[in-house]
Image 1: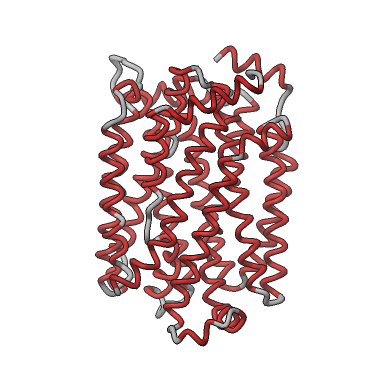
Image 2: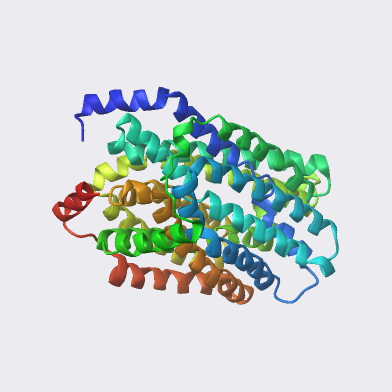
Length: 445
């Protein structure tokens, strides 16, 4: 690692690079999903006449993850073999189709619920084609400019801009929902930033379409790609890093929006505690304002956390060690959250949910830093897709299961998750092989 003064100079150089600005704006625009702060509420209203609504919502997530799972590794191999930039452009087409289908499905009665399942499928395709691809492109840019030692700094910075986009998304979504009246219109409005991101990606330089030239057919490339994956996963550090990252992200993704039904349950208490009953607003309007404002605050803090993830690595001397610590802190927050839901203190529940978001956005840059340091350059999109695929498998299992348990008790759900997290990390994913061995592996790649 360079000396302290040299490090600061290189960091300034990185921040001024024109492509670094494009990476920032990519993430910023991508996270302008105006429906996100209210998605569970929107679907709860849609399924209001059904039994076990959270189970049905979990089933929608399940369909999304099935599509992500099926196409995850093939999409990574396609990106590595036929061009990352091309694949990223395709993913935004899938997202745009998904938003249009969600709008259409929500405008129809619940008899046409299959339209929402098609929407979830296209969203899953978008996730499969996107996950790992842009990160692999950033790593290609870092190789070209010899910034390899700054992975957590670069990814933490770009991710922080994504989270700033999410924070602004929270504010804008409040005004948009009041402006359009029918809440499903936010899906149509969300198409606009995704068109802008599509145009932005077309401006990336041609070398960002990095791929391996070959005379093999697609099936032969798939077969070879799978062989390469099995070979890569002989590295125990890579296995631990990928599975630790994927399992944590899967749990986070499956529970992060349970704050929405919790807020809905406690809305009366919150209104009285904050004196909002004197404003003359309806309950739905107050839910809109509270959720939008809450997500804005969550993502502002998450942005700061992501930007400073590299400092956490410096503090504990290892990205993997930091990942392990954050796993246990996550479990602790879930247990505390279950206690405060039981004793009916919603303000503390919301405060603890903030830490769930902060920990995820500290941990993700550290995971990319750790995994990126030990995988082969020509397998980046593929390995990152394997990580995303394993996450999809877990969400595939967790989403309906968590939804079923949450229909009975969200606190019980959190306690169960916390216990499993501690056991899995302690006995399967904790620690790493010696630094010396890791370094020799990295050099061989």
